[in-house]
Length: 496
Image 1: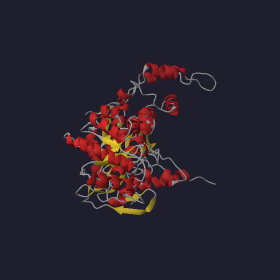
Image 2 (image 1 turned 90 degrees about the horizontal axis):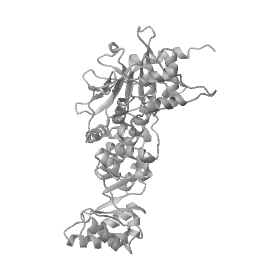
Image 3 (image 1 turned 120 degrees about the vertical axis):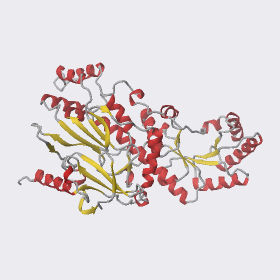
Image 4 (image 1 turned 30 degrees about the vertical axis):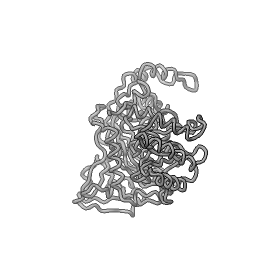
C-alpha cells in the first residue's frame, strides 16, 4: 500500500501548522532583504528517549508530504492579514503577504531513512535553502519527526521485550486525540507492533487490525457462558474471550466450555484475554487449565497498562502470555511524552556570497551547544552490517576527512576512536529534495518496518538493553571538533 498523504488526512493547506514566531522571523528576514540568503539547518535530538541507547528515526513520510504541499492558500493569507500587533496595526504588511502568496518551496533536503537507528546529535534531516524558507519549516518538521520517532522507538523497545510474541497496539482510546492516535498507530507498526485495534489506521495505512470484545459484552448477557457462546456464534473462527469480568479463572473455565462446543462444530477458540490482576499468576493458571482441557494452541492475550519493562518483568516471572496488547503507555509514550528534538542553524552564506559563516548556538551546558557546519553522518560497520561507530563531518570541508579519521565525543574530548581505513561505511543522510523537487522514492510502510527491525537487531545487545545501556560511539571528525572548540572559545572571549 502506498503511503497515505498527510494532506489527505487533514486539510489542503497545512502551511499555518507553525508557531507565530516563525512567521515573524520570516517577516523580519524579508524586511532586512535576507530572505534569499542560503542557510543550513539540522534537525536532531540531544539524548535518546526512555533512558535508552538509541532511537528509531521516523516521520519522514509525513514530513515529505507536508513539504510537497507547502503553499499559502488564500484563506491562509486572509487570516495572516487579519492579525494585529499590540498597537492595533496589521502585524504583516500587504507586500509580505503577497510574497507568501507566491512562495514556492525550493530547498534541498537530506534525510535519514525511516526505520534507521539513530543516536544523539546526529542530524535526522538537513535542510538547505533560502533562509526565510528553511526557518518556516522548523515547527512542522519537529512536530512530525519528534512524535513519530518517539513512538516508533517505544514500539521497538516493546518489540525487544516481547521477543517473538505477538504485539498488538491497543491505544486509540487513550491517545492524544484522533490525529495523535492515527499517527501513533502508524509509528507503532513501524517500530514493530504486529497489528492495531485502530480501524482507521488499518484502512489508511494497510496495517493489520485485531481486537476482542469489551467487558460490556459480557455484562450484556446473563452470564459469561452465554456471552462467550453468543460471540462464538458471530465469530466461530476468530473468537478471543475476555475472561476477567467477574472471576478470571472461572471465566477461563467458561471459555473452555464454549471452546469444546466450537470444536464439536469444526472450529477452534483463538484465545482468551486477561486485562487485570496478577498477569503472571493468572496466565500460568489459565495455561494449565487450557492445556489440561486439550487446548494447547489457544493463545493467551494480556493487556492492562503494559510497557516494555512490565513485559520483561512478566516474562522473567514465567508468565504464559503469547500476545501483548499495549495501549496507553505506547501511544502516549507514558514515561517520556516528548523526544525533545531541536532544529538549529548551522551555516549561513556570507552576504557577499564568498563562502559560509558557520554558526553555533552556545550554552552553559555543552550538551546544548550546537555543531556548526553542513553535516553528514557516516556509519562505520562490520562486513555483516553491524554498526560500530558514527562520524559527523562537515561536507563543506571534504578535504579534512582523512582515510583513517579520529572520532571525538562532542561531550568529552578525551573519548576518541581511530577508525581503520579499511572499515566499511555508509552515509546516512541521503537526498530527498533538490531545489524543492522530490528526488527520492519513499518505501512502503511494511518495508520501513522490516528495515527498522533489522536495524535494531543489528545493534549490540548492550546498546539495546533498557537499564544503563552501553553508549554507542558517536563523535566529530577531528578537524570539525577543533573548529567547533575554537568557535566556542572565540564566542566566549569577552573581557570581565
